[in-house]
Image (cartoon, rainbow, N blue to C red; front, side, top):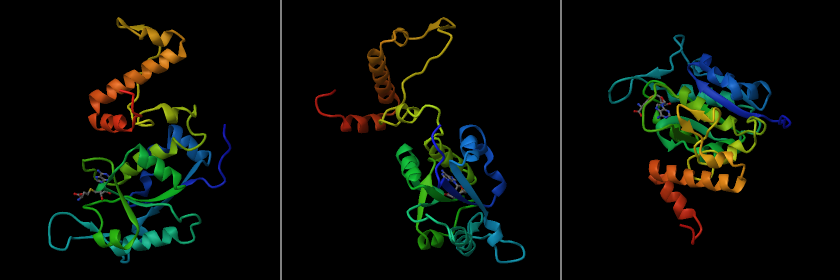
Length: 246
Ligand code: SAH
């Protein structure tokens, strides 16, 4: 067990649904890491920063159109109160989850992890007033080319991916370096017991105990799978490989 850090990785979450946290992040690896103090979570209810007695956080879009838009003044109050007096905020990103953001990938997960913490704004309705995104140093991150009804599920995804990489969270330290994307390839196929199942055998080489042959087979399979399924990753991987190798 590695020692617990003095300053845990800190997530500040701005949401209209504070009861959604920790939610799934309170279970399994992330949940254990949370109770061990390897990361911490500050959840802020944006509605607490509304200015009227109806606790309004949104309004109709100027120019017309469907839905509601989150007000910049309410968001700014929530953010400023959240960051007030926060030590170590500098260099930690302010993330707004949005379909038009930078696509989340493992490289971005590592960047966010390395920052030591992040502030996550979960949008709802049609999203947030553009001026908030201009006036604050917001980084927009997207989970992919589809539309969620809110940023909370995107926050789960990002935090889950970050937290499992924190020291002491995963059982075997190497599982972070061997898995998909770590070297630009998808992962090789995995097998466990039983050795024969529904007439399907585990590949012989994996039973050989020959570590070099196993490593070579796994790399070959990872390359094959990546080439077949993700030509985009494959091109990038081949471009990076030293000359002389295929
Ligand atoms: N009107 C917006 C969609 C709003 S969906 C549009 O057309 O782009 C409501 C909220 O869900 C967003 O503010 C955002 O925080 C979240 N969300 C939706 N899709 C997302 C995605 N692909 N990645 C990350 N967050 C997303």
